[in-house]
Length: 409
Image (tube, rainbow, N blue to C red):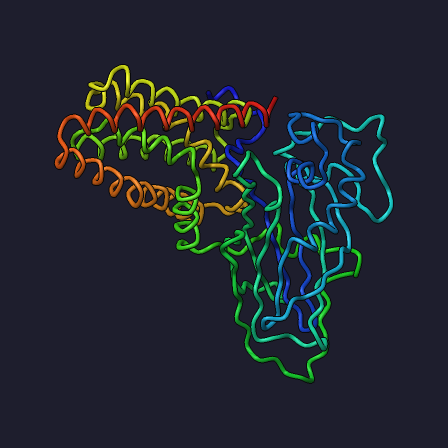
């Protein structure tokens, strides 16, 4: 596994993670918003380019020009409840932190020599400007977004984009940080400003200041990572199916809690390793593997139900948990935004705790209902619930397996 660190970063499930750096000036917001090339390919309807692991860079030139306008429609900024209109100032392509292509302002790379790029490893950085009404800073700003909500990863499942928001004032002082998802907007309260204060400028109109935020993001609070972990479970239908498969065959509470703890311990290992850039597996492997693990456990429930309380099932949960953790890591890598030291440790801890809380919030009530049914209706209910429930879980896992294979074929 450790030999695969050079492969593209894991990005399992319909989750994409971006950075959203903001400078709040007296008369406007200036921001840099990242987008992976996979996101650009999906939003711009590039078809096969959204699934090809290493497309040629020239295929994205026009799409990148259009994607800035798409972001202006998708980012939902409000000042004291009133929508703000924005403008694209510039964009550039960045791979591993270094510019990979020139910007919209003039020079371009030679298409004949453009290298192949990894969809999930290469980001476009868009510089945007949103002016405040009347040219004066409001008391409240709301950051919302609906990026890719109109596009389905699979029938009935939309793509889910998460932004790690970092906000600073015009003097580069930290103001706020958080996570912005479609159903989780972020509201910033501002102190009253002096009406006589002159408008501030963060740089030239056509370019975001290079050292403004990206090299020193505002740390995201512990609670935001905790909420992100919970939210990933509550909206991660494939993980919920895997949890249901474990619960269906566990006859004793102790067996089920051991399975949850083992699974959590395993995925915490790979979440940590991925966040530290020690281990990365490509999404074309991680996503189908996670779906296949659902089918495997569900089928085993039917063929060998007695294994649920054995050491073999614990080892199975641990092994599958290692790969599931790489899927969870996709929800954390970009959100960390380059923090290190104790901040990184707290981010990983909060996210893993959030995932465990999500497991308990869903798993314990579900298992309790199964136990109540067995107590009320006897062994016939236990057998029917195990067989029918496991077949339904297997069908759901097969659905996700087909969706993943299509996405990366």
